[in-house]
Image 1 (cartoon, rainbow, N blue to C red):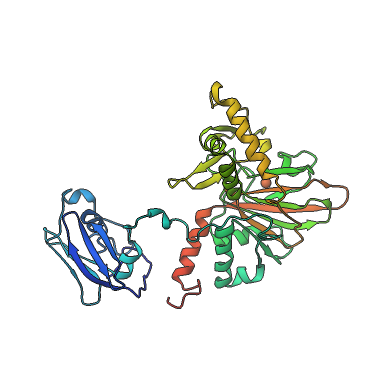
Image 2 (cartoon, rainbow, N blue to C red):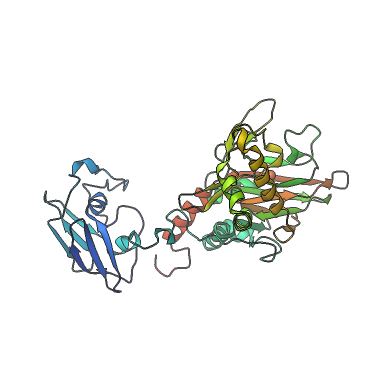
Length: 397
Ligand SMILES: [Fe+2]
């Protein structure tokens, strides 16, 4: 019988030392002397026993309506091995694995000190942090799970990485993405080309300079991860540029809280112009999560549509804030500029990090990149599964 309601194991140095039943919650004192409160209903809802959780799927079968709203335990105690035992008025008994319970503590002064959806805290950066993205060996990340883990931690932390030494194969970028998880299909295909074309469907497929942008801000859900594999880069020009949108947002907020408020509330319009598709979306340029932290940024000069959703009275304010934001993305002390060479693949968080390229001369030599998209959640899921398998450098398995 499973002792936790999931497939994860929770090794812990700390156990339940004592448990006391109060009016509305159970107070657990741990062997490290900390204490945590768990509401009665929360505990009942999270009973991991086979009649509450299907053992094969580890998905819940218990429904909250099966118990009264004012449910209170009949008995609460520490088990012999330091788990938490609860007996309910209807005779149902629950045992909470001590490691699981400790990992799911929600009784803290600042609930924001932990993110349940992000494995690694983000670190913002600028041009003094590095001169090229943190770089990882292609053979290692393709063949070794510990190397895969280290690469993904960097991707989650900084939002940008470079994988170096990929084979000269136009499809290998899809294999690199599949090493993490599901590849996202778009109207550009599963894998797509970036090269100067006579009849391009996007400015990316010209030799024009591309200003800092994210890809597909025209979509309700922008791709979370972008891969750009360089097969050849022999043209004059065509350097790569990355700017941390998280740092951009921090700077704008510090320099003008009013602009920041505008950027997070005024919806801008986006449109894909195409003979065969017509994607449109409207969204503030900076989107905040429930904690007020930036969850995504939308910048893409050539994909903006006329500003029409904001209302007459806020158009000037919207432009003023946008100018500020866009100006910050060009600041020299924020821009990391480097050159991709054959076998390099730039992998970055497309909802956080802006990318750009300098213009190039298509007659001076070939420049050909292949790309694809995936999602942040693929990275986070892979990281958690690697951690389960002990590939995170932890000594336990
Ligand atoms: Fe792009």
